Image: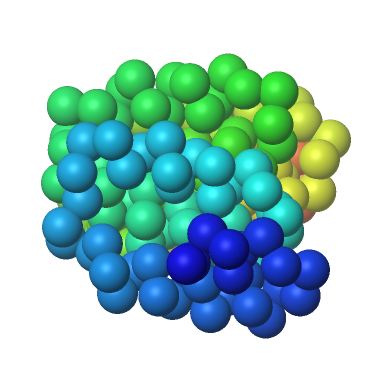
Length: 159
């Protein structure tokens, strides 16, 4: 039923579907759920739906199945689909001190030359989110790499 809702034209209905999916599978993921989650990410994609799915579904899935992290994130990051790339950058939002900073930096490095607004914004947002727990590390990383101005501005906004 939720997949049918997600296929509708209106984005508000997509958000309802995502909310229902979150309630249904959060903390009860099965290994195969990543295919369904990926389909959500590439269907009717827009920043609001992708960000919710990335943080709560992909992020939650990978917390439950940490051994899948590198495989999933590499596949998303190497994709031609910009929304999967964005997901690879922001899925750790809310991980707080448990953020894998090396993985975050690797994703930022991989996509830092992108001219895509949503990628530049994602880099800055992910770094800013983590800066609450490692301000010096984020500041050092941002100052030592060549990020696009938008990414840099967003990353350093709290520092």
